[in-house]
Amino acid sequence: MIVLGVILLIVGFLTGIAILWTIGIILAVVGVILWLLGAMGHAVAGRKHYW
Image (cartoon, rainbow, N blue to C red; front, side, top):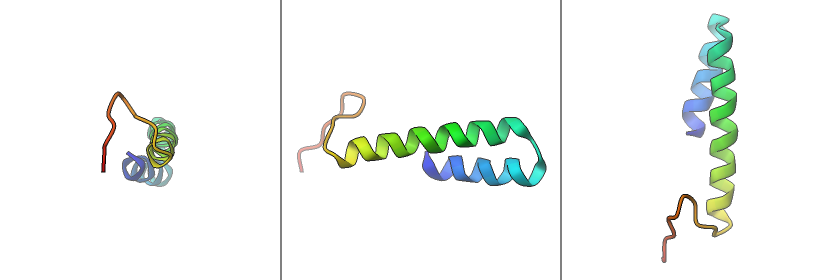
């Protein structure tokens, strides 16, 4: 999700399409939040791994 967000940010910036820029920011932020929650050991979306 983070990678897709960054790709959309770059494409939106290069083409000047504001909606891609906005969606890219949202995806990148949500991806970072989910990544941090998963790294801290919290169950994300009801999934918890036991290894």
